[in-house]
Length: 192
Image 1: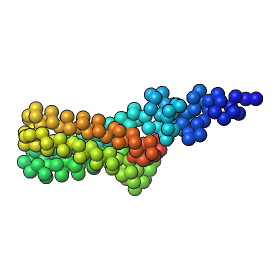
Image 2: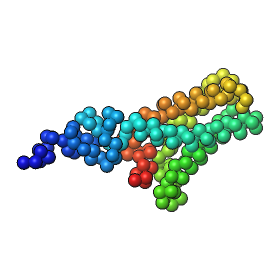
Image 3: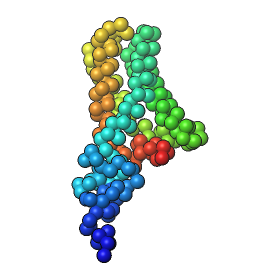
Image 4: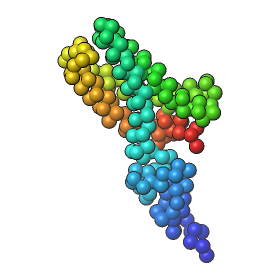
């Protein structure tokens, strides 16, 4: 009798998807759970929700956000806008560039403009919101950072720190969402 005929003996598919000890990845993600975060005897098999995948998704989102955030801060500071107006401009541009970066990939994958926008909204909204809350809270909380000017170390150090902190806080959020088939899992589905 074949060793695969015995449920739970010798490996194979886990009843919840994922990887059964000694078996193969049956989730369709190809991740194999090698980083210990997904699959394996203690994994949950809810798709590729590894820390690495979450970090990559967050970095992708952060890139678009950072472009918009920095541009908004530079424009607002250079124009002498009030801190509130500068933050509002930065947030708006972070969403625009964050969505645009994801849409670019979706359009390349063959989606229509409308479909690409829907995927970007589903993939990035929560991630961008979390990043913007953290990022702008730090910028406003650091004494003098918003008024420091573009040529000061205080301005750029505060901005760099706020973006780094936003990344660290958003990675677990993205991991949680990807594990449930939400967030960047929606965009990932169109790349394969």
